[in-house]
Length: 340
Ligand SMILES: [Zn+2]
Image (tube, rainbow, N blue to C red):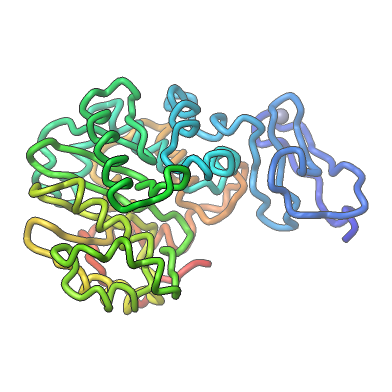
């Protein structure tokens, strides 16, 4: 495909017009080097999409606000799934990155001592102490001794489940409140929950009947990533209260039946629960600094371009509206559109 149809765009950082480099083909950009529109000064470029191009940063850390940049490269470089590290780092530099939004929100909350307040806002009543944070299995901050204990235990659980040391399960967010309880969060931005039809891959995670009321329903739901997180969360929590939270922009109508099937298969108790919660539920409750408001609004916008100013997406607006109705627990508003 000719490059003539790619329009010049202003650099989202310095405003310099970025004219497409001459090229015989317009292949999708997997990294900055592939971008036909680049700003050498700002070390970023636009993907080669015709509409709503993603901004791709040469330095992945530059994709989060400077206020939360310390520690991000260390955390990504040490994420628990060794085999996935390089790809994780590259994708983090995309303006559409789910991980960048996760880092921005949770590292800010932890740094300001607001984790407990945010989790109380989604009715996690045991969130009373500051809480120890791990992102992708890495303590944040790295020197947090309580989080280091959780990290060690996470590896032990992974070993018990006979996961490969190079490709361990990597929960997005863990917040440990000591004897009070544990929160494990599977984060979604605009991607769906991972759905797998190959039943045999569930086997190692469903072997403990005490955590699963009906393993066959869990397999039938296809929700493999959530099933892994449930088992790992139950093991990490031991006898403590556990909340497994699926954090989404807005519930998807297409996922309702699967989530209900999944939940019916779990051995839930008043102390051990699974819920779906929106980003607006989590972050709507407290006042945020301006830079964070902007970063979160951009993160919850479907458009990939950080220079774009199209306003909030349908899904983000739906989720904001839902904030006033409280928490969505596997209930789906049929009016909300499931983005692809
Ligand atoms: Zn620039």
